[in-house]
Length: 406
Image (cartoon, rainbow, N blue to C red; front, side, top):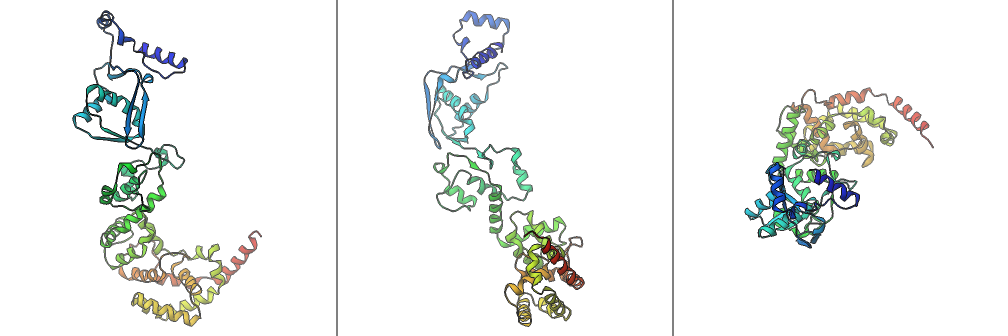
C-alpha cells in the first residue's frame, strides 16, 4: 500500500497519470517468496502489453488507446475477490453476449475488458457507448435536477409508454419528424446506427407534453376509467363512472398532460372566481363593454327559467338559447361570448364554454360532485351575480387606470 502511494506521489510531481510501475512483475522468485513468508498482502495484476489497442465502437467508430498510459491493473484483490472488469468479461463471454451497449463513462472499462478478452482468447463482443443524458445547463443529469427514479415519475403521473418513448428519443431518431412511437414501433424501427454521438438534453417540458400525447392516445373508455377513478380516489367526485364523468373527461382531456393534472382541471371548472377575475387587467375591456347591463339580461334569462330549460336539453338546447340571447342583445362573436364566459364560469379562458356550462348544470343535478370539492352551482353563481355592485367595480377600475404609469 505504501508502495502504491509513493508511486502516485511521484507521478503527481512529474505531472503524469498514476500508472503502476510494475515493480513486482520482474521480481525474482526469492524476492516473492520472502514477501510471502512475511505475510505481505498481494494482488493479481494483468500484465498490459506495449503498443496500442483499437476497437470499432458501433456509435463512435474507431476508438484507440495508448497502452503506455495504463499500467498493469488489478484483476484480483488482496482479499481474494476478483474485480469488476475481470468478472464482467468472463461472465459476458461465457454467456455469449454479442453486444455491450452502455454509457460513454464505461470507455475506460472497455479498454481493460478488451485486453482481458484478447488474453483469454474469448471472441470480442460489439461495443457501443451511448452519450450521457444532460441537464438543461449541459451538465451531467443528477438528483439536483429533479426526479431521478422510475417510481418518482410514476407518482408524478407519468405513463410507462411515455417514459419509454421519450427516453428512446434522447439521442436517437428514425430519420423522420415523427416523435410519437408505441413500444412495438420502437422495437421495429430502432437501429444502433442512428444513435447520436453527442449528449441529449433532458427536457421535462417535452416529457410532459409527450405524456399528454400518450394519455390522450389511449382508447376513450380506458382514459375515462383512468381519470374517473383518479377523481373519485382524490375525493373530488363521489362516483368513478357515469355520463357526467364521460363528458368531463372529453371536455378537459386536452388540458391534462399528467394524470395528476386531472384534479386541477376539474377543480378549476367547478370553481367560480368571478370577483378576482373582474378585478384583473384582462377583464377590463369586458367590464367596460356594458357588462352590468349584460349581467342584468342574463339574470333575467335565468330567473325566467329559459336558460335552465335550455340546459335541460343539453348542447342543442344551449346552442339554440345562446343564439336567441345574442339576437336579443344585438351581440355576437367575442362581444357575446366573452361576457357570457366570464359571468357563467367566472374566468376569461377555459375549455369550450357551451360544453362547460352544460356540464356545470349536470354537476348540480347528478350528485357526482363531492360536498367539499369547492363546487359553485349555477344557482349559487347567479346569486353572486345578483349581489355584485357594478358601480363600485367601475369606480375601482377607474382608480386603477389612474394609478397605472403612463
